[in-house]
Amino acid sequence: MNLTYEKVTPNSKIKTVYNTPVGRDVIDKVLMQMNVSVKWLTNPLIGNLKLKHLKKWIKDPDFLQVFCDLINQEKDVAVQKGGTLTKQWWKEIVFYQIYPRSFKDADGDGLGDLKGIIGKLDYIAEMGFGGIWLSPIFKSPMQDNGYDISDYYQINPEMGTMQDLRDLISGCHARGLKIILDLVVNHTSAQHPWFIEALNNPNSDKRDYYFFRKPDDINNWVSFFFEDAWQIFEEQDIAALHLFASEQFDLNWDNPAVRAEVVKIINFYAELGIDGYRLDVINYISKKPGLPDGNKWVGDLMEFRGIENYYYGENLHKYLKEIHQKAFKPNQLFSIGETPGIGIQMGKLLSADYRQELDLIFNFDHLEIPGKVRYDDYLYDLNFYKEYIMKWNNALSNHDWMSLFFENHDNPRMISKVNPNPRYHQVLGKLIAMLLLTLKGTPFIYQGQEAGFINQTFSAEELRDVESLNKLKQSNLATVLAGSRDHARTVIKWTEQGDFSEGEPWIKGQVDKVSSIEQQLTDADSILNFYKNLIEFRNQNVDFVYAPIEFIYPKRKNFFGYIRNNYYIEINLSSDLFKRPNLKRKSKLLISNYHAATVLKIDPKQKMQPYEANLYLLN
Ligand code: TEU
Image (cartoon, helix red, strand yellow):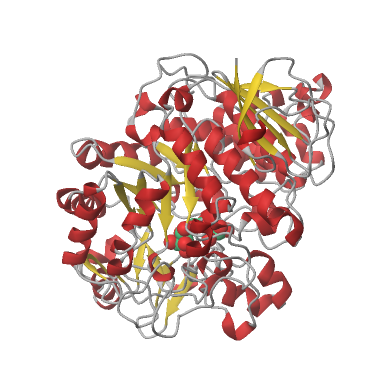
């Protein structure tokens, strides 16, 4: 099914390079980061230039070779069009992401736990969600809140016990909910017995589970948490690689014993009855042999030096296929990979159904507008999301499927990113729901998003996240607050009194002015009930889920319109009034963030209100 193409060299034309999967994704990414339009490439003058001519602009002598090597390493091309669409449960449901530490505390220690989640399963099921994804719940020193695991086979005592997990799984299944866990196997905690043994015993077989180097032989990579990627252990006279926190060491997947351990973990929880996994930074598992220095130009542009050596490594497909064959497939588990930096074409090669690697990926290209990074303080333009969605839908075949999300535990709240003006809080919260629940793909709603939660303000002392605290060492509080992951980690406001815990919560809660979940449940007009209605609509129209998407007036700025089967969605993406495009078809209003559904018909001459979003039935 896969075509192959010729090797690229510095003599290849730019348009040839753009037709390779990795070339296309990298060029798109670089142009986006530089805030240059892709249209630039369709200019024949540019397209016919040879790669080597770029030397005039990119003054890094090694860049071209690094780029060609990365492209040539991928031998396959994904199917671009057609194919047969297969139905899958994970395409039909709406997922709800739970960050356990902040969700609900049942034992009064101020830290969320599994019993807390069990107590809220009725709420989750009544909202119409079809499955939950739990951020990590395993034993961990919590330097990175559980993404630093020290024992894969034990539940973190602050979260509960293995019996609690069994109860949670059966509680989910009794309500028809699927449950997926977080598989964090790019790295372990420094406190994992494997690492302790590896560090202290050079002759141990665990030594080859990680990446160790002599302190004077380390490379120039930096970690995602704004530190050097190597931790030096003076006593042992050795350095170990960590792409994330200083106590999260990267596992060496080139060692078959490590891959066997991963298969064992996957199987263990499969036997307990879970339905799948979200795989943490799974595209980072295959590092370039020899761990060469990162290219400086790429490092400066992407902010993280070294990334081209591991974000799409040469054995990535091989390792994913291996765990698919040995664990995911036999247990019929669903898999969604978290894949930072991966673009459309690479994403298709990782998740198309005939590839037998992953089922879905989380792509992040839509979370910041061109030229911006998470810690920049700016307003997100929803027109960019529209472009992103159109581009993806054009590129996907029936073998591909996409995830839809704006929020997770690593990102600020979307309402605050788009427009923090409280005037628009309600309509914007609902507009976001309209997008995620009516576009083509599987929606992932992050806890609190269904109630329109927004960013909090934190003093330096109130911040908890290791990434934010590291960032604070090199920049000011305002910068940290623009992108802090703690915004998403505030504890859930269940009632007007909070009611997250009987003890002192480990982190701040939601801002006062956003009403609680309990309050919103009783208010027919709340953001929460808007989510509930839309989820119900989606759950009752499975053919809507699979329907093709046709974009209406795609070039009209500030307007997003699309038809799916006999439904029409129209959205004003801005806070300005907008002249409503007349569809000239009879329609009945079903769900709107401005009008009661009893209005049934909107005067086509009436202007669209700020962030107005409507769903109609066409007849
Ligand atoms: O995140 C990986 C990741 O790359 C980002 O989400 C990261 O926080 C940032 O965007 C880098 O620019 C995953 C988890 O979701 C995150 O919570 C963990 O801290 C991280 O991996 C390490 O396990």
